Length: 222
Image (cartoon, rainbow, N blue to C red; front, side, top):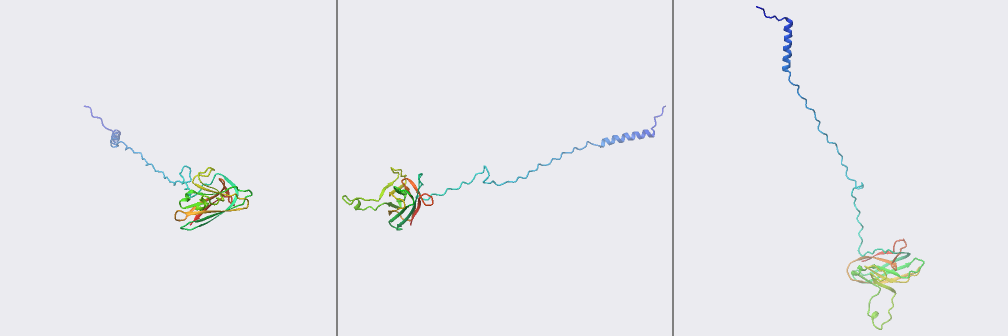
């Protein structure tokens, strides 16, 4: 009867090595997967600059217009370069009537055929200006001849281009170097102080003051 094969030392070592490899393969599992590291997005630093009003595209504040005082007059489109000196002397009681004297001195070399004193008609609500004081003798039938120094008295709009909203009183002529003293009768119709524009013209063209500005002044009555 044959004998079973004997294991040599070399064979035993080979068997042990194979068993060790099999055991290592069983114990070693699948390598764990590594999740990718994701960095959170960073928010960039944003610096906000306040809007500059002077930058293009930005709205700008519009300066408010200077309010026009009451009883003002618009300057006529026509200008006369002849120079006159104008002085206004009011003598009106605070609660009564009076007079307004306009003095016009010519600094020009030529005659002004007609000097026109102009004021806003709206002044009538407080002060009524007229070139004379009405009385019975002036209009009486058979009375003395009607003599007047003024050449016109017109509430605009007038036939000679006097603008609406104005009253124009004509006087003259005014020779070079001469002075006209123009008395105006003032009748009070309303209480309180009042201020108004007064212009001096040749026809409808405003004359010039000695500083080159239009011959216009602001009259104040207490």
